Image (cartoon, rainbow, N blue to C red):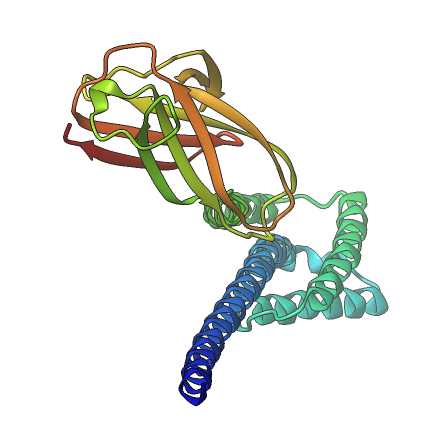
Length: 303
């Protein structure tokens, strides 16, 4: 009887050790996932700040060029008070442009302040343009300066084009962060009783299984998943219908609609009832959703 109690104590201790290990693994996985989500959110915020800063830098560059182009015409500003205010506005544009080019903006609050500043400065520029235009002073020197302005504007247009390209690249990175992901994709031949069929020629169904990980960046809601299974001969199996993708239509094997809440969905399974002769070889499984190809995997089935 004492020996039995000893065995029970050994077994209980072993189970407790296993339970501790399992709990440790779960805690490690949860902490890792939380860290990854925080990293994604921080990256999105960083991308938005960079994009806003590029945009503001382009606008300040344009305004600065306009102020510089007016240098030759400030002699028409006879009023010293007006000239002083004009010079203060020009210097402020140069100072803020230098900040945008040399410093990394670290908060949306500062972005908002700079946006408000440039609205005010643009209004000041329009005011002085109206004053100078009203004087009607034109001569050969001014026409030469206008030619220089056009050249500077052409250079500025090129710079703005570069900024726009950078903004477009940043936007693409944000969009990719929102894409639904899938992991652990598998393709399994199934018998009529639901068990695995080793001989592909006798399979009654093909089962595609995968997991949708947690992603707080992906918009929640109803998601329709389209699965394409391509045979070794290059034929899309089933082809029940088609869906829109990159401006065209693609046939699919099966589809399934799920409700995505941002949390992990494990063991998503889609079945296709075999209605044609299957042969051993390489089968390709593709999964699509929200106009994205989420994955493309190849499976070699020998029998």
